[in-house]
Amino acid sequence: MVALVSVSPAGKTEGFTAEGLVYRDGVPVVALNVHRREVEIAGRARGDEEFEFFVEAAANVSHPWGHANQLALPDYGGQPLFHLEQAELAIFDPEAWEFFHDYRVVLEAMETLSTNPRRQAELREALNASLNILDEGDRSTLRAARQALAGVLAERNGPAAHTVTAVGHAHIDTAWLWPLRETIRKCARTFATALDYIERYPGYVFLCSQPQQYAWMKAYYPEIWEGIRKAVRRGRWEPSGSMWVEPDCNLASGEALVRQLLHGKRFFLEEFGIETRDVWLPDVFGYSGALPQLLVKAGVPFFLRVGKRLPKAATEIAIHFKGAPPVLFKASGEPIDDNVLVIRIQPDEGIHLTFEAKVPDSALETRSVDMEFHFRDSFGDDALPDAYERLLVDALQGDASLFARSDEIELSWHIVDPILEAWDQGLAPLAFYEPGSWGPREADELLARDKLVWISG
Image 1: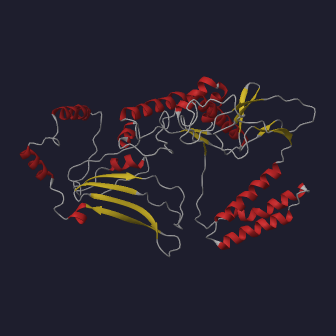
Image 2: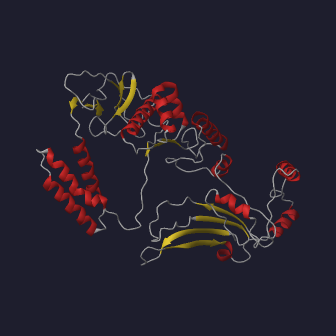
Image 3: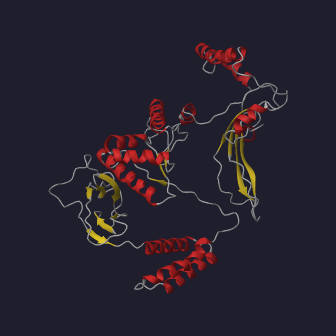
């Protein structure tokens, strides 16, 4: 048994106008909006029970672009912002619900696969067969109508078809076209619903960033906060992002971004015992050039290898992109190589992007390919002066801008001295390697912990 309650005008966009939060026994349980109007009353009802719940409805001014009422206050003398459009009891039919969603998935797949007429025809045939079985006046036909779709839903695109792993997420702008008070209530509605889904669907996992929004739940909605803590312990809720909010990265200074990381990571560590090692910025319009350095300091893995008498004299930065978990093409199932961006500082200055590409006209085979840019090839062999040439010219011209300053040298020794002392006292064992090799075995083992390998040469 469910109650159907609609507080959202038809056609309005979720998040901008009327929404509601359902309370039962003083505890927030689920949100109501244009896409969700069901409130579960009872699994089975006899017909004489009494149930009570309350709906906190938010009526907000819709903000047209460029013409926003900055206070977002309702016009008490104007038209109502929303109406209670529905308040009815209904019987929930899980079999009909499951058939509806199966049919919708097949229908949307058919409409999407316009470039695959054979597959599209198979889906259309299954949809037609299902509807021929379904009798709207006879619910006993639901099971057979749904079974007619089972075959196409179970099919895979091939032996190496990828597996998609999805988690729930709600990107909430902490401050945008609504007042901050509404952001807090919006978070409560979203998180209450996520907790409801976690209990309702055993495989559901929710991912959420922005500790500021968690802190609001802790301060204003203790039941939601406790539910989040329990869900985190069960592995059903994933704190993510490392930053206090999802900040703008164009106007913010380095110091402001450092605060975001410092307070964000500290909150997750103190409240959940989790040290996040990622940054989640899905809606930022540009990134600060300072981010890589700041993220490294904040705990993102970064490895440095230096040595004498290595096989090749080279200075470069290799950025490994995260590998894709599904194997799309290689029939043997072995993992494909990660994409790698290499910035060569010296010698032969340039940029290399190595990535996997499918071999044309092959069955299921990929090959690593390289996109390269070299200063020498584009501008000639003499385009870049030798390091000592530049140093001597700068010295003759009295330009010390690229020279190491005394305070930089002193700071370097502050870093190196403790390492030398640790070696002398046997606190940091040294790993040795043969001249002409790429370094000691321990260096390879260090990266292997994070499933990485060095780029050699």
